[in-house]
Length: 429
Image 1 (cartoon, rainbow, N blue to C red):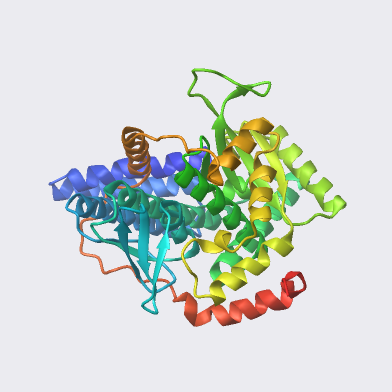
Image 2: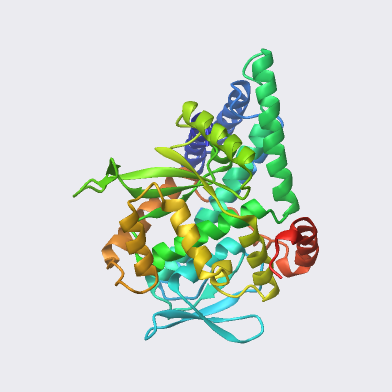
């Protein structure tokens, strides 16, 4: 997200906080006027656009309400009450916990039971699965589940804010160079916006989710010393980054001992193995590195990872046809492809022996590192604080329940047909 855009939201937040704290009607009217004027100033400075300023406010309030509900859900967890995710594309699935096996027991829509690891139930919401966890599920798992789900929803709304603003942005100057550059960006942002509105199944998005959720599950279940972080739409379109991977900081390939410093590596995925496309992607990444700013990305480096489309399209179709079982598509992927994903992303970032050691942990050949409960609680506290600092204080007026998204089962057939017609040649027989 652009720094000045983010600052504009924070400045507006301060005024709204003042408004809610005030008990004087005259003072409230004054603050309302100041907020309106701030919006006009942001438009004049080119930070917001006249066409979408009102929508930016609306989306910010939607983010704000998610934060309010997050705190309500965290309080419910402390009382050991059942907690449900924020949104989803499927029927709600109830989750209990088998303490002996340290696994979740999920009741599927047809009434059958299925077990899942902690990593699986925490990443399934990425695919639109909606869970309700009862009090038998460990408290730290329920809290992680609800915080991650809130963040996903907030980041999606933040992307909508960016899209609505960038689509209507004007060139920086009247020069032909700036005009053409702005037209190119407007076209790119418009295409992304249209795909989101149509909810089209895109192979690149599917592949990105497969890679991200695979890593996230392995990190959670095996306590691996790496972390996956989302990139926003602005970082994707202009910074050429699909997501970030945080690894221990190194000096010429050697870990810096006794240091908690990390490096943030931007990852761009491509499904196209064509040499010309590969070179084009590399040039785009090189340009993004040269033009790097705090706005476009926070990466210490950017890497290009190539994964064949034939191995990403089919598992998604197959998984949906099987009723979207727990664990997403990575449980359907062949073992060799899981290893290909793991090595493909980490090669060049970590020494080969460390990559192989982590694979042995994943395969159960080596014991996983112990993660103290205190470490988990500290991480969770930091993430909640970060979300609090970015969002508005919760609105106090009565609000109706948010509408659940269109049930995926209602329209998935049409989407699958479109997807199959376009990419069927890559499906496994």
